[in-house]
Length: 95
Image 1 (cartoon, rainbow, N blue to C red):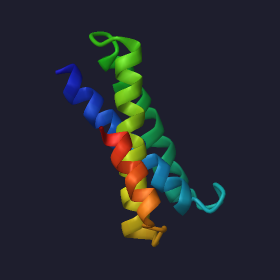
Image 2: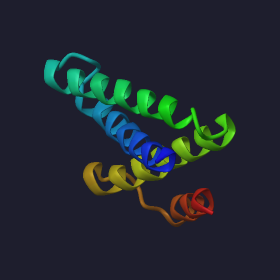
Image 3: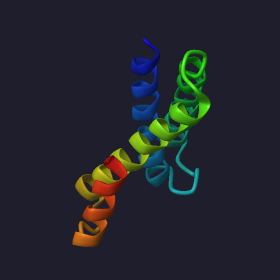
């Protein structure tokens, strides 16, 4: 169960990281509210997962999911660069 919570926390981290782009500097109400909600859910789920997992492991996995997911969605949704160096770096994070 803690690994499921951690995975979900990572997905919500991706959601709020991508959501930041849509808030337009926190000037758009709905994207801002959804982004803040995703932040709260992400950290809450991370905290619940940490009740059963070591802090170092949980935090590393959480940030890894967030990093990889944000880069992939940035490429797919926002047209961010998919240069070979960036993809190799992403692959190293996933190892």
